[in-house]
Image (cartoon, one colour):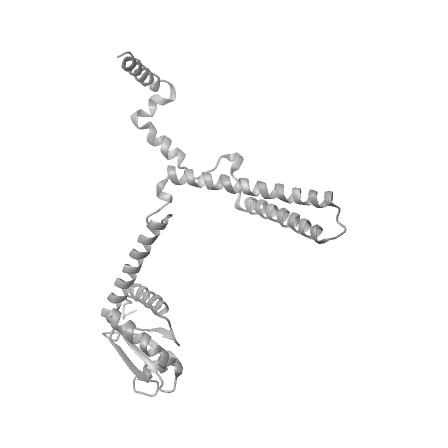
Amino acid sequence: MLLTATCSNIAYGGVGNFYKGEDRYRGFYWFEAEKTKSQGQDLPKNYDLTPEEAQTSIEARKKAMDNARAQMVELGFREDTKPHILRQAIIKYKKLEAKMHEGSIRLVYAAEAANFTNPEIADVTEFPTNVFANKIKRGIDEQQKITTIKEFAKKFDLLLFTNASCLYCKAFAPVINNFSKEHGFTLETATLESKEGKIAQDLGINGTPTLVAVSKEGKELFEISRGFSSVSELEASIILANNYSEEQRKKPKKNKRQ
């Protein structure tokens, strides 16, 4: 009971002091003002270096370390260097190295504290920091990639320009066939000399194997790969083609009267 009464007195006493001086204008939401103030972007005047000043200082520190390291190593290779001279060179370099290490440690601790006080700047969902979360993230990314490629296959067909005497074409054939089946693409094959070869001519294609994506309505056409490509390279190119296609479709259409 005594403890409860004491705590109550302290609490009410604090309330009484709260309404004195400048605090009386801040109301019950004073903590929000403090939070906003702590999240300000400006550094104190004593630490408000310009980017140019900071860069100059960093370069000077790096140069000092490089010079000390070079002196230490060179003196170590010289047979006539006296032990105490070499020892002094090592101490000089190690002291500079220790200062650099101390600064790095301060940065690490400050970064950890900043992530704790401002969790919005450390998105561990998008950028996980442990092995298990990384594994989950890779699985999510892989599934999203496959979904995007399959959606692209619903809108685009693949056209492969090939040549019977091309060794790269023979090696690429099973790769692109399996890729197309796995992701649901309709794949057609043509030579540069065929009537479909006009598409290749319009794109400036003169080598094989070359893979092209053609939209099912025939309004869009992208070159996906030229030469032998791995599955991962094909996937990356399809993702880029999908993103580019989406960008083009979102662009406002030009008025024909303009």
